[in-house]
Length: 354
Image 1 (spheres, rainbow, N blue to C red):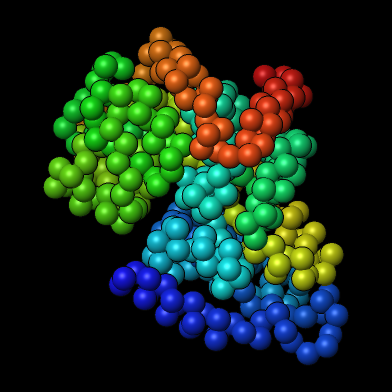
Image 2: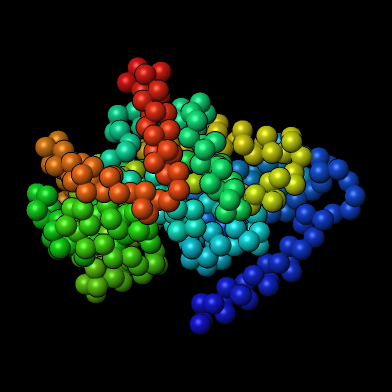
């Protein structure tokens, strides 16, 4: 009840403060000025917030100040699920969330949460190709529009690391029974359960205390989040399964986007398509730097990558236990979307010589 009251109050405040944003005078859309809100699912300095701010600077510069983008880092407008709902309802205009939380609203997003879809080699270049040349994004947009949103791209924020408090992971068997915090995604729960893990959804802001108190044994995050949220302070072991790249998705309210001039729409789309590679490479380097910093701050932490044979074991579990029935969670046309994505990935690998 407290959360429902908070969200209802927030909606009223935001609606009142933004009621005239898209109803200014009688000018053509091309000459209008816009002040929009862009909440993200990550803290200040993390991927989503950095690139939302970069987008705001770009729009202000390209439109001679007609556009003002106000960015709200994680927690300032609620939890991850709250900000997606706000964007769906048009209370805020943009949102930057991840595949896990978005899948609760657009189930076909679960295609991106399916383990062992993405290759390790050349992933950033492949994502750049998929965003700019593939057929997947247009197909995904059809499903997002049904829920009032438009995805502007799929972005690499780093591979997910499993961090454990006490238990080292030396074999696939060590995963069995591990009470592990994951995002609130039925698909991810099924992914991790396939390995014998006990998936445990928990709000982002409660992970630290969950590890500290023993409520959970482990959690899954990209390296930057382990650093910025200080999860490494309550972790003893980091292990890389190579199962899941963390994918961020900037999105815009469909009604808002459709009300814009063709020129402004193109600016928005072109920006996000143009920064897929740059943003991925930047944060790949940042993740490597964060790993080194964590190792310096807590040299007792162990970092381990599963062997090729162990990764093959997990991939086989995913493909035999999860892939055949993933559409039960991912919804209508999800099998088609997976086929389109797989073809895009294969076409990207061929085009890039991978």
